[in-house]
Image (cartoon, rainbow, N blue to C red; front, top):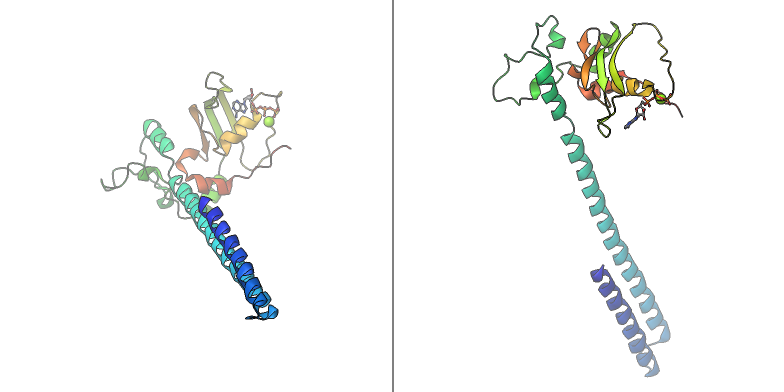
Length: 222
Ligand SMILES: Nc1ncnc2c1ncn2[C@@H]1O[C@H](COP(=O)(O)OP(=O)(O)OP(=O)(O)O)[C@@H](O)[C@H]1O
Ligand SMILES: [Mg+2]
């Protein structure tokens, strides 16, 4: 902005010089007043045009930087590393019945592949996950949960709950009982501290988060 101020001062000084010089020439009869006035008008237009261009370029640079930041953030969040580590502790490799769901085939993978890659969903498209989600019950199995910012308060203490497929379940309880918390866990905004949530027998943590987000719909209270 120091640069900007200096430029501005320079422009104004030049304009003043132009006025003074032009005035003197008109007085001396060397130039007609019309020529000086139109020259000053032309200078103004040129100055503001160039200034506008410079500002626009500056804005563009800011926009590009912002887009780059957004992209790098989005790229960085694709693999949930904490989640991948968590899975390693809790889930054992299992037999593959369906080609589409070969989620835990660890041994078949090449060494060079990232440790986290093997936990990423192998589902071809979200329609597969969608039909899987509709094919069985949703079960919360011994779910314990505390919010990360209040680890000392256990909101859910060993919740077991089955949401029957094809039915509507109403969760009723006093304010602060943890109803919304259950919904947040189902949507995977948070993960259970202990226990797991399954749909049609599959741990929901095995699905790619963005694919899971396409399957879950939430309408929040106002
Ligand atoms: N983001 C959060 N961080 C820490 N504690 C939270 C957070 N959200 C909710 N809690 C706490 O978790 C407990 C359960 O809250 P929750 O919102 O799930 O209750 P609820 O049953 O939906 O209540 P309501 O009927 O008022 O909607 C409450 O004690 C609340 O204070
Ligand atoms: Mg609520």
